[in-house]
Length: 411
Image (cartoon, rainbow, N blue to C red; front, side, top):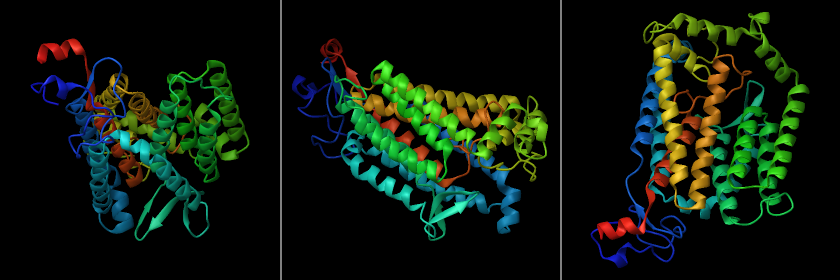
């Protein structure tokens, strides 16, 4: 809004302020204004946008470096996987644009149909002949020459659904016997479908994020502790009853015990960090990407980055990731309505946990788990999903509260 307009134009509309990208309507902005102050659409958070774009550019460079040899072996061209990544990036920028242009309040209206469609896609990957199986897990759907992971779209959809549900119950008790069961049933169905794939990492990621959203929404502490404890016990049982999961935990405790077997990937990651030293071996000069380190261009791309740019480069990239996450939490804290606050918190928390898990794995601080590094790892579905979440955060960042005393000064 232009501060030079009359006072009547500065008063909040009866429903919501119009978006700069759509015709004025009662559905084109945040669903309500706070009880004190007025809502105003401003510029997007440039620090969040800038850090995100720098991370994407780092990803392009490192994917080309880490994948060139593998790409040449598989496709006869060292640039084939880079070209695929650039196609994914183009689609991801379109997803970012959609997240930024579409007012975030509209996602609340569309989420029932969107989440239902996402759950259907999650179920389809379990059907033999429909879902694509790789590495012992059925997580992909193929469309023509492309494949995608429905879970990467379930991530933002579940965050939107949870934020909308909790915002609708603002001011009401959040207990297992009062209001939480419908939400937990939907979340449970989603996590159950992920477990059947199996995708234990995404299940833990989404479950933990939802629990933290319940915490900030003011859920009853005793009930929340019970949910968290039950989730932890379930995770321990799932690890203990599956040999490969238990092996990963034991390997994490001592990867050198079987450095040519179960500990091979983590040990090779350690060697990449050691090779890099302080300043790195130079872009393109990694030794570990020469078919020593598995998944060098995907889950373990940060190891190659540390090898080629050294600890200095690794710290700079971690700084960019920290800047992005800090701005995301700042956007959540400053958003003028409950839905936007919870949505920004949920999206940022999900990306933060995924980042911590990925970095923890490649540094040997956590058991190995196949979660990509946001904005950097190779993988079209993950990149598009992360950029969409970044776009939604940028849209939320546009809305702020102008206090009445400030309005008097500028009016």
